[in-house]
Amino acid sequence: MIEPIPVNQPLLDGKERQYLNECIDSGWISSEGPFVRRFEEEFATRVGRKYGIAVSNGSVAIDAAVVALEIGAGDEVILPTFTIISCAAAIVRAGAVPVVVDCDRHTWNIDIDQMEAKISPKTKAIMVVHIYGLPVDMAPILALAEKYNLKVIEDAAEMHGQTYKDKPCGSFGDISTFSFYPNKHITTGEGGMIATDDYNLAERCRSLRNLCFQPKQRFIHEELGWNLRMTNLQAALGVAQLERLDEFVARKRRMGKRYTELFADIPGLELPVPRTDYAENIYWVYGLVLKDEVPFDAPEAMRLLAEKNIGTRPFFWPMHEQPVFHKMGLFKEESHPVSERIARRGFYVPSGMALTDEQMERVAAVLREVMA
Ligand SMILES: *Cc1c(COP(=O)(O)O)cnc(C)c1O
Image: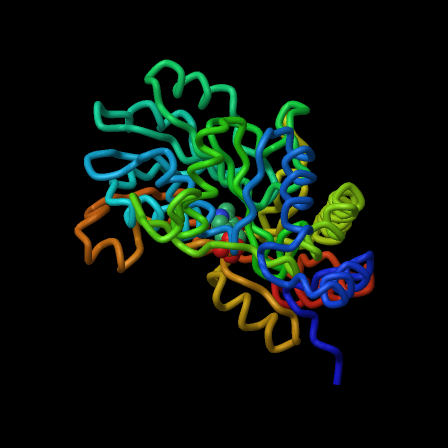
C-alpha cells in the first residue's frame, strides 16, 4: 500500500527535544516556568511588538483581545465572513455584534472596497484576518480606522514571519493574535500569543489569562477572567520553533512555488496568488479553487483525492452561513457570493512543514487524474 500523505505534519527536529528535556530535568512544567517569558519576549521582538502574552491557543487569544479592548454589548465589529469561527465567536461571546464583509476573489482576503459601507455609529472595531498566506492590504484599513476612530484587532494566526510592505504581520493595529496549532508556521502543539505595544492592554490580557487574580488580594476578583495559560512545555517547543522561523517561511515559499509549477497545466484549477504589490505569499496552506466549468464541487474532489490517500481540508465556511449564528438571529438573508463560491469550490492540499518534494509530485499526479 502507498503511504498516505497527511494534510499536515510539523517539523520538530531542531532543539525541541533538548528544551523539553530541560523542562523535565528542572521540574518546570507549568506556566510558571522560564520558557514562557522567554518565548513571549522573543516572539514579541520577532513581530515588532513591545509585549507578548502567551496563551493556550489562538482562539482564546482573540477572546482575550476582544474583552481587553472593552468590546461588548451595543458594539459592532467588522470582520471578514470568510474566516474561522474563532473570530466571530469571540465577538458574539463578548456580547457584541459581528458585521461581516465578503472577500476578494483572488486573494481570499476581506474586500476592502465593501468595508466603509458597513461602518455605523455602533462600530467599535475592525477585526482583520490574514487568510492562507497573503496579508490583507493594511494601509486602507488603518486609514478607515483612523477616520472613524475604530480599534483594530489583527488575527495573524496564519502569518508568522510574513510582512506587509516590509513590516511584520502581527505588528498592526491595537492588538494582534497568533496561533501555534501544528499546522501553523511554528507550533507548540496547542498555543497562542497576543501581541501589543500598549502596556495597559498587555496587562489586561495577562490578567484575563490568569482568572483576573489580583496582585494584592489574589482571591478577590473585580472581573471575570479565564485560565488561558500556556505551559512551560509548550513554550519550550515555541522557543525551539521560533529559532527556525526564517527557514520555515523560506521552506513554505519553496513548497508553494513547487506546487504552482506542478499544478500550472492541470485544467480547471484557480491557484493561489503568488504575490501582491505588498507581500509575497507564504502559503500557510496551499489552497485550490475549482473553476466554474468544472462539473463537481470541492467535496467530490476531496473524496477522490482521499481514495488515493491524499489528505485535504475544505476551505472555511462563511460566517454568514453558519447555522449557529442563524439560530441567534444573525446574518439572516445576507449573501456574500465570493465567499459562498470559494467555500463550495475550494479546498487545500497537503501543506505541512515536513512535506517532501516526492510527496508534492504525487499530490500533483493524483490531482491531474482527478481533474481529468
Ligand atoms: C488557526 C487559526 C485560529 C485559531 O487558532 P487555534 O490555536 O486553533 O485556536 C484563529 N484564526 C485563524 C485565522 C486561524 O487560522
